Amino acid sequence: MAGVTGRVALITGASQGIGRACALALAEGGASIALAARNQEKLAQVAKEIESKGVQAAVFPMDVGNEEEARAAVKSGIERFGKIDILVNNAGITKDTLLLRMKRADWDSVIQTNLSGAFYCTQAVMGAMLKQRWGRIINITSVFGQAGQAGQANYSASKAGLIGFTMAMAREVASRSITVNAVAPGYIETAMTQSLSDDLKAKVNEIIPLGRAGTDMEVAYAVRFLASEEAGYITGHVLKVNGGMLMG
Picture 1 (cartoon, helix red, strand yellow):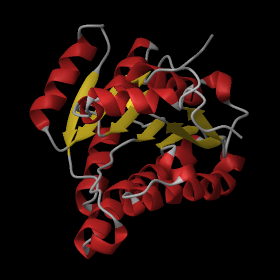
Picture 2: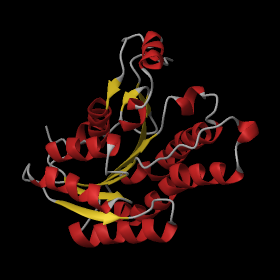
Picture 3: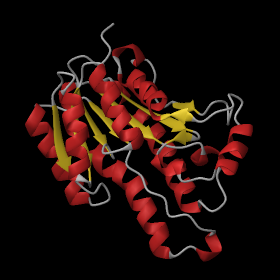
Picture 4: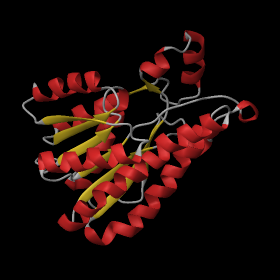
């Protein structure tokens, strides 16, 4: 199986959580890793983990919501590795509150990071992918981009936007053997969910058919599959990784 051996992957939001897991999973599959996020110290720690596996890794600090920083990081990644074959648009933030109380700044910052950031990075890698006539773009969306969530109008809108972006891009670049897909996690054990009370966690687990939260690595393995040679005939797809929380 060819998998992702010899490929170069750029992951945004790679300093922790799902982004870190994606970096580790792709490295285990044989890909060199370009790590992008705001926290340089955490990125360096992830890079050490990857290098301990005998795989190349490099750190590119950036705020994905800043267009100039995003484009500069992608350019630096291509200069460092000679190419970028796989882009994982993972970076995301939340600023939750009911719409009636939501400040315009909270709306704008979530859309800027979660949706515009994916646009900046995708546009920045596209020229190189078109030239080499091969590429994999995976956007990390959410179950709440499909079903919505009270108190998360900004987040749900950004993640729903990523789904539309995924399908539009898939149609644009398919003729050059570039696939564009999305992974939609459900309730996943991360630093963000660890702060929830035990009672709330139990209630959430009750509505998940598998009866438990997912892990960041379970999301990452789905990403690795979509990034692989074996997924070459899949594009414009949203892969649900939610334990059955949302079906259909």
